Amino acid sequence: MKLKLVMASALLAASVQANATLIIDNSTTGLYNSGLGDLAAMDGPGGFLLGANISEGDPTIELAADPGFAFTPEFGADWLNGDYTGGTWSGPGAAIPSTWAVNTETAIVYDFFLDGLSDLTIDVGVDNGIVMWLDGVFIFGATRSGGANLNEYDINLSGIAAGDHSLQILRADHGGSTGYAIEVRAQTVQVSEPATLGLIGLGLAGLIATRRRKQAV
Image (tube, rainbow, N blue to C red):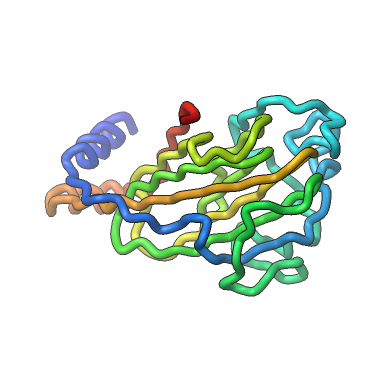
């Protein structure tokens, strides 16, 4: 296993990257769910989804792993795998508002296509909390006080395969005001022929996520 990881790292290091392309921003449409209501009870007192009107304070939390929510029926049968049956979703192509009702949660799905193996950079700001998945796999979750600065969080995802993908987002609020800003850029990774053969031989498919909080500007 160690040998495979070392070989894969060397192959990726030898690749050449093209300029990043903006694929999602606040003007991008998607599927939108504003019928979730207040979900504080979904993970209970002391959970990530805090009580209304700052009843549980206004802490800074960053999730280290998937919170494992037991989603309410308003999310549909299995929204992280694309089954919205029974949910309260808009149709495709809905505008995504940058604000929503205070003390409620909303969900978003952005569907997008990558022409080739790519690295993604997600810049996002939210008032108050956000949880994100890519194709149903948890990538990030955090909440903090303050407004929705686009430089609030920076999520970097490496080696995302070509094809269709879904970025799934749960926005959370626990009082005061709401706000949201997002930009997602894709940078195609041009892999040389020997590296391509090596990647195929290893069966490398991956989601390598590194996260850091950016300083507000």
